[in-house]
Amino acid sequence: MSVLADAWYRNAAWLKLLRPLSALFKLLVTRRCRRQRQYQIDPSPLPVPVIVVGNITVGGTGKTPLVIALIEHLRQAGYTPGVVSRGYGTQAPYYPFSVQADTVPEHGGDEPCLIVRRTGAPLFIDPNRMAAANALLEQHDCDVLISDDGLQHYAMPRDIEIAVIDAARGLGNARCLPEGPLREPPERLEEVDWVVFNGQVPTQLLSLPPLANVPVAMQLQPGELWSLQGKGAVAPANWSGGRKVHAVAGIGHPQRFFDTLNTLGFDVIEHPFADHAHYEPEQLTFEPELPVIMTEKDAVKCMEQPPAQAWALPVEACLEPDFLSALLKQLAARSAQLMDKHNGSQAT
Image (cartoon, rainbow, N blue to C red; front, side):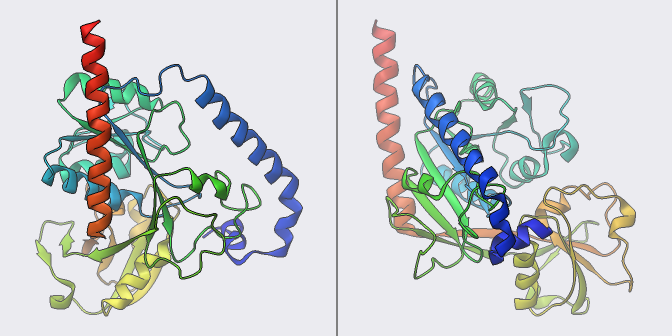
């Protein structure tokens, strides 16, 4: 974690020096949100509903596992979901760009590549998410779109908003950038449809405004370790490679991954990297020579030149049945409204 990020989450006193900049940032963000919503002529120009999964903090909170879980649950309910993403840090050959199972992360982005490889769902990236959505719908028969991130991308229409919060870190000092980690003020959470906590919902939501819905808990359950060299998969309990390992995590909160490995009985040598880090082989060559376990998000960037004895630990997002039931009911109602609107437009 950077020095600034560490200060945000321990509420360092010197951050108050940044308060004027934070106040200006908050003002600009609020104006931008109000302006884009005011001048959006048609709030639902797309023929299918859009679920936006995002956050109001800088850094990872667990959005990608939630997107993967939503794809699976929507399919079980009879939907055909597609996904759009900005494609953070990518250099795609062109935009909108369709991410395939064999797309390299430099072109498709680490998180989009992971989503496609795990689910096979159609996924388009473009800094203009509307362009990505239109391209996807032209080429695929999808009846619901999930926007991976994009809570602040107000040009993208949305029918359901889900904000994800890391339960262990919360909102830090609850201040906007640069004094704190927030992209938008805490009051933004009053407007979303669902607030999902990655971990246990805090008993006292001290830094949060009143929420429109009961907070939802999401637990990330580790799956089977799989070999980057194609040696198969093994449950952590059946691991026979020695318990002392190197652990690599280039995610928003690396400590969460290291803690998970410790809980599974591994003796971890921690190697945290920046979120979305791109690796050179020498960066993943460690002493002593031990097995290397990394997040699945990091693994997709290391498939061409994986470290020796490299393994990935996937996680599955476990969601509350009541939340899934209510979300599907909300989605069905919105789908019906859009269908009526579409049929009415065709009749005229």
